[in-house]
Image (cartoon, rainbow, N blue to C red; front, side, top):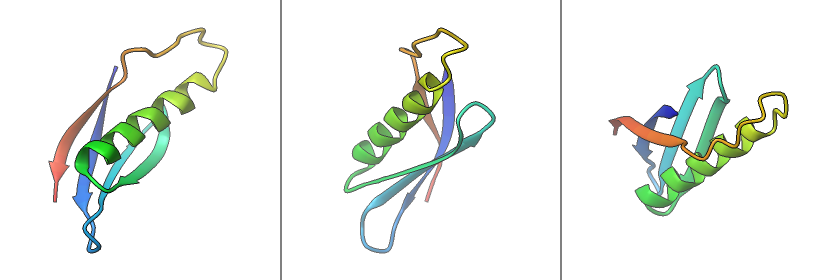
Amino acid sequence: MRFPCMLTRLPDGRWSARHEGPEAGAVEARGATREEALAKLEGEIRYRLELCPCTGETYQHVAVEVVEAR
């Protein structure tokens, strides 16, 4: 399952990764590096999806895809 996100470099040098969609809602994660921000975003999306026990899915294949970086 792919989740497009926007990656932005913040004024303090940190990174922000943001996704908004019907599956997980609006999700934002920040990190010291691009990789850290993306990993945190992926973890948060997976957590939100697994909160819904009605699907029975484990969402092992969550893929965050950068569609725009600033």
